[in-house]
Amino acid sequence: MPIKWYNFYGRVLHWQPNAGHTVNSQILAEVSQCVESINGVKEGKWKATLSFYRPLLKDQSNAAEFPRDFLGISLPEQPNKYYFVLRGHRLVVEADSTIQTIMEKLQSYKTRVALNFEGFQYQLGDFQLRVGKVVSIQSESLRGIVMEMEYKPSSSWEKSHKIMGEFFDIWQEALSKRQLPGHFVHMEPNFGEYGLSGQYTLQHTAVQYATLMLQMIATAQSVRN
Image (cartoon, rainbow, N blue to C red; front, side, top):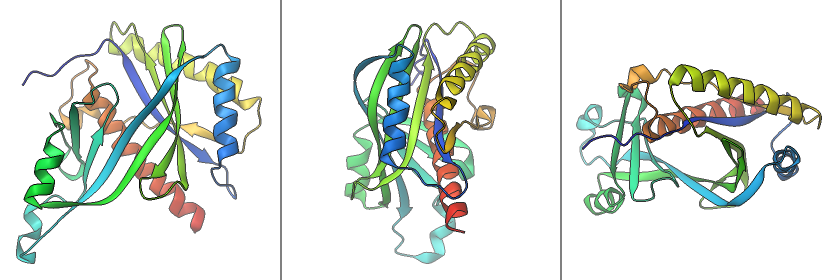
């Protein structure tokens, strides 16, 4: 199946609170207000879902044959697709969304944790911002805050990367005026390790969400410690 290319370049970021602070709904509200203060036009709601899977093993001697670091992601741009990220194998795969039903019937993997990323989508000229909360499907307790940034007229990876960096600096400056106890963090994965080329696809976005989740888990653990 040919990979669909998208005429945009995207970044996925998460909110990292300062030492001694945690994420809360007031910070989320302030971030959303900041987007609107720089003329962001609210376009509607968005939602993505990420699931951590664990293998259902009848024979523990076969454990090594099943990936353990196994994530599945649904993205709003392609609701009929589902993306698997196997970080240990540096592999990302696009599948039809019906694969989730097949997995349930086969009972080969079980969802260990499922998280929703949900909030509002904004347009700022050539940029699109999605700001939202991270919540467990089982409860509404706030697990984190995410922001997805897209630059639409993506002509080349290098040029888009530079323009996105400049826009992010402007955004950080605007947000810093609100003196919130934390900041957004973006650590770009090595896409080449996953066999992804310079032309941006939603597989790049899926890998970023997988990486972001590990960063959020590490941040939460450091706060508890």
